[in-house]
Length: 424
Image 1 (cartoon, rainbow, N blue to C red):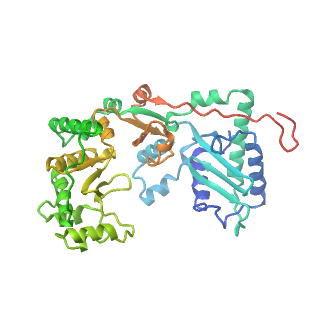
Image 2 (spheres, rainbow, N blue to C red; image 1 turned 90 degrees about the vertical axis):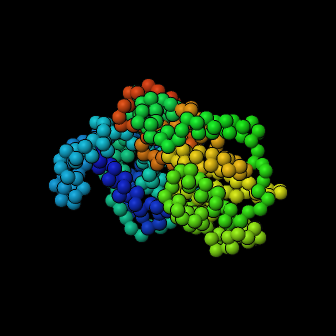
Image 3 (cartoon, rainbow, N blue to C red; image 1 turned 135 degrees about the horizontal axis):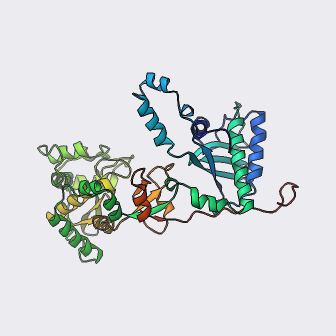
């Protein structure tokens, strides 16, 4: 195992990664010795069979090392990043909880385009395109040597037939992919369940189940359609949802409530005559659509907002409500019940998902701690999972008990000769 420790590797990863924000990373180059090691690294990686995406992947290991490798306590204290040594040590152990730390290496190479990249823990560290000339040269010898040493260790284990066994037995669960049912998470974390159901009554839940069952069975169509629509009508529909959720500003006019709670980029909706069906129709069909979000009626992030769409059908309009992120589940449900209670034609997107979540039947994806908790759907292609967590650092044994883990990919070693070498 290389002399580099996990905190030192992490700093190298972050330092070199800053130069590779765009494809090819023109302007970055290696010095002579680093270039030689870079070529050696990719020669070694040719012994690994690419996966279905064309990438070669290995798990490299490093020692956590002493706390001094993590940081300078006196400097961090002076900068105000820690308040005492206990906080400093807790930070170190939180970032590097195990004596042996694991880093997933992903290498990509396209001989046709001359493209090469090294990704460590889902972050691009090095990216090269042979057609782009570098204007600087960097000394990366120590870090690339660590990569080479790690790859050699993996190759030795693959030759000996023990690599996969080591990974299966030793890879921490915080680096693995799995699923756990919502009800099992709630058994482990009772406070999460209590917080989730705060603000909704058993009667409302019962009504929601009945309505979503009808929607699933096609017995709850969006009828009768609204034969006309004005901007003021739309603001009024939004105000129903705001009131059901006890939002602030309920003493304001519906239009002002919308301005207060919605995204704000309304594509000019607020500028049209509020009580004119003709004005709304003209705006609906001819709005500039310059990146506005007029239907984002409860603003939030890209995955955490609530939208109320006006959808034109033959003979009129209907409403489509969408908001399926876990933190906004109850808000969306109460918004929906308010619209239904007013007799409005409304269709709820992901209704069955929300119903399954209320029942605790939803599957939650567990993803490696190096990944962001967004855009992970591709890891679960046949399971329709939309909510993700990292493996918790507390109550680990209970999560391990209830979770279902995906098999770790099997790494295949190429046994044929390379570049005139003797066959392995």
